[in-house]
Image 1 (cartoon, rainbow, N blue to C red):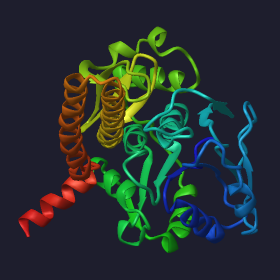
Image 2: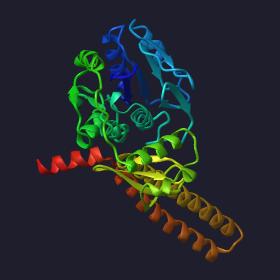
Image 3: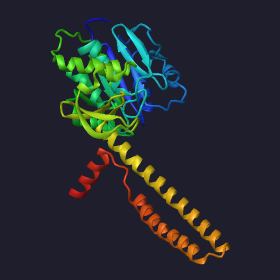
Image 4: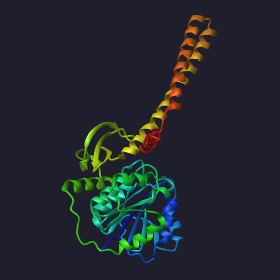
Amino acid sequence: MSGKRNIIVIGASAGGFEAIKQLVAALPADLDAAIFVVWHMSADVTGMLPQVLNRQNTLLATNAIDNEPISCNRIYVAPPDKHLLLEKGIVRISRGPKENRFRPAVDPLFRSAAESYGDRVIGIILSGALDDGTAGLWTIKSRGGIAIVQEPAEAAFPSMPESALAAVEVDYRVPIAKMATLLVRLTAETVTEASEITMEEQRKTAIETRIAAQNPALQQGILTLGTPTPYACPDCHGVLVAITDGDIIRYRCHTGHAHSADSLLATITEQIEDTLWSAIRGVEESILLLNNLGDHYADKNQPKLAAMYFKKAQEAECRAVIVRQTVFSHEQLSTASISTQAEEDEG
């Protein structure tokens, strides 16, 4: 496998199932490359993607197994609830911390491929929401690899391709129908010169790859990778450090969870709504209790005390109305939704 651009890593999320299937169906069965796929899925979903891909009668697809050797003419799919990582010559499977709220996540695969195979890697971003894979694609590109994104206009969910295009100097922006032909050409190329990379970038990539492989983040030196922020990790409430990759800013906590700026914003605003509904529940429980106690004291012939409980219940109801109005006006935000609003305001 040495010398060729024959390590292909693919990341997809919402809408990506069909995109992956169409791409694999168009690939030649003798493609001289190993393909690795991360498709976001729930932890309790059966790993059915390999079965679907094998119906295309091209390359053999299987759920990846820890420590199995890497071979050409194969498709390795991340199994449910497991990160898919690459080391020299072998596949690794881990239950490392979630990244961008997912396991498997795209960034760990892309990052580990870039670390192990450098400019032999071809990274592909397909349809998906938010921006998982953007930071990993940046790492692939920084190591001399090739960056490809699905044409956003044809993607069922264009956010992942659009995010990659905005943050990474992508080499090819193509529809699925043209991607297989492009891969045949690229995998026939021989890599002649190794790309230079700073020691700091090598160190950072190595630390994050080890974290994804289940090594304790704090012991690996996670706090040295960025600047501490006032933000708490949505997954464990640990302190987040801000990490920069070129113009990209992202976040990791000391336990290892990782969030892009988009993922962090979406998660925080989602949790705000959950918190507000919890506040409404608490206020309404207090209303029920206050009225119940008012009835109790009225039955005990203590009208003044009963009236005070009823009054406090009415005051609580007024507060509940305010919180309820806040819930209904609350926005679930992402960088994509904010960009869309900005474009609408300009129009």
